[in-house]
Image (cartoon, rainbow, N blue to C red; front, side, top):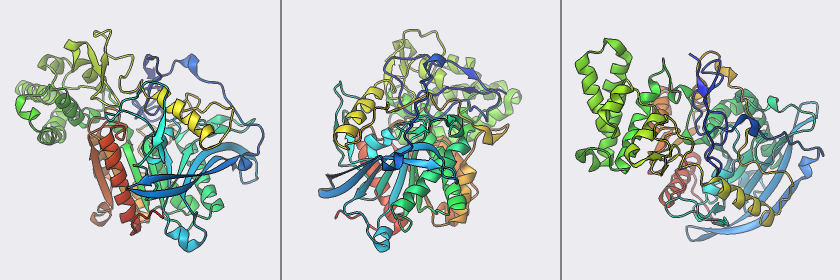
Length: 535
């Protein structure tokens, strides 16, 4: 059936002024997935105008500075490079200028032997339409946006602080803004559509990675990708694209808040999969808000274990059987779902056992006239119209856009000494409509790309990080996708799954920020057979 798609606003956060989320009908679930991993809707008339560079000299547009931070009590000196590289056709014509920020521990590797001991990670967010600022200033870079310990945005003016939980001790990093995001723009006279799609995006991001690797003599270095939300989709696709087209084998891929198979997110008639896979996240959310029965409230782990077992067992069975299920079986399923979600039996029954995320977010705290967040279901906001099925805002989304935009714009000019009069597009509708066409009449699924890369390059390791309170890309959806990959037992040992007491941006809370750094460091060390150094 036709799928509904949320038109882009952002990978993670909505604008400060709440915006409505209209449904847009697409021709097929493949070309316009029903639910993109972390997007909100932008009104059609709000699409920004195309901005394009005209000088064609982006390879000279670099700013190089030096800095120092302290990680684990030890100083880490680094060189930062901010600027754009030209993406060119084979004939030499510039197609776009792609903006990036690279951090390399000081001194830069001068020989092949030195480069071989220095991992490098290419980092990006998703959307599609989001710049890399979220992972950059949220968790991995040498500075981060200052948030409260609970992960909430502070009042303006917004500030950056030294990030003692940066990944820089373990790896050099290159933060990539795909064309149309950040300061990256199509060249004058070039149609942006050639960059705005699954395959188009893979082609040009891969070309940038090849170009950066070549110009900076990093071919001998262990190489990693790190992506978040749709960035995990990109990373999975790149793992195979880089290997087979550029000859770049990866040591590891880091996926944060993962979506590889869009069928796991696409609620609708004819697709019961997301109803099952979202259930444990509903359980975690209800537990946080004290809405579960007393026995389940005592132990979150036990509650999640029960929810996961029911989701992929009896619940999957009764959904598959549909009208052939007996009245007694349906009654038992209603009771079980009410127990695991904190919703009333009446709501579950009226939903025909199929509770989508919008219904859950509106119904859990209905009596308090509150809606729970999509990107972090622990956060709540006032719901002015409890009778509406959906909500016009996400309380876990609105507060961060200005914080990241304000902090980055000051940091780029003041600290990195990079000057541009272009707007830095933290999130944008410019890349829409995104071409999801590779899936034909099905759902976009890039798990097979990752699977193929891991089979062809058996040394490639995979880390998958998920938050228990993420209603954009639920953790069981990622786990389900991994379990369906056709890998040998020996290759499955290359997969590491990590879980966090957080939402989609699982690093916003101080404990998640610290845990993610530790997990990434351990993963990179294991994938390269080295330990982090701080010289």
